[in-house]
Amino acid sequence: DTAVSQTPKYLVTQMGNDKSIKCEQNLGHDTMYWYKQDSKKFLKIMFSYNNKELIINETVPNRFSPKSPDKAHLNLHINSLELGDSAVYFCASSQGSGQGKGEQYFGPGTRLTVT
Amino acid sequence: AQSVTQPDIHITVSEGASLELRCNYSYGATPYLFWYVQSPGQGLQLLLKYFSGDTLVQGIKGFEAEFKRSQSSFNLRKPSVHWSDAAEYFCAVGAREKLTFGTGTRLTIIP
Figure 1: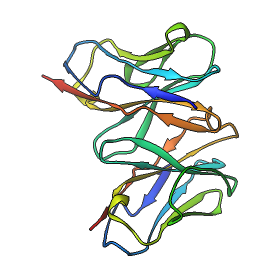
Figure 2: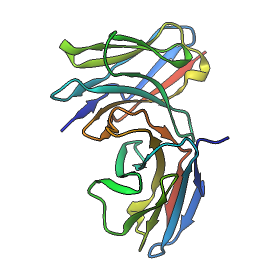
Figure 3: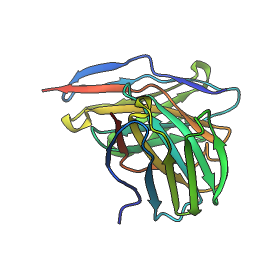
């Protein structure tokens, strides 16, 4: 009965490769997010989708492309991976518009290591 | 733009002692405020939130936080910590469709 799940949990790959991280939530929420947590634990939002529509797109390289096939899923595809992409990526979801108010539920994270 | 400052990078307390983690925010209007906890290797779990009303809010695991508008603060407290409270704690402010997190405070518990 996991609320927000991510796959894979660990991802080790070489520079230049393309990889995807998948996220699914079974909470019935209509908004989903991707966050990046760097090695110093700093957590920063990357994208937010509401009902499959992109509503937040922070300053993220074009190599990162989110895709939301339905409101329960938000995947993150990364092209031409670089060393600096190594981080933990968290998916989250919340309910309702005004996402600053809605409490967000986080997945367990995907640790991406680029070698 | 909103911002959050957690001035303490690392705090060490003895088991059974009281705890206060500091959080200061910057935002032009009344913010929505949150505390999250991240155990090692885990995702973030919501401890408590403040939207409006009573400025002292209760959360899970015996935590509470007090919103002080005059000080732009939302400090987290617990009267008696347990070894299982060792984790990273994040304060966040919600505004303009997104959450902005502080840099976190790492809590270490000593026996």
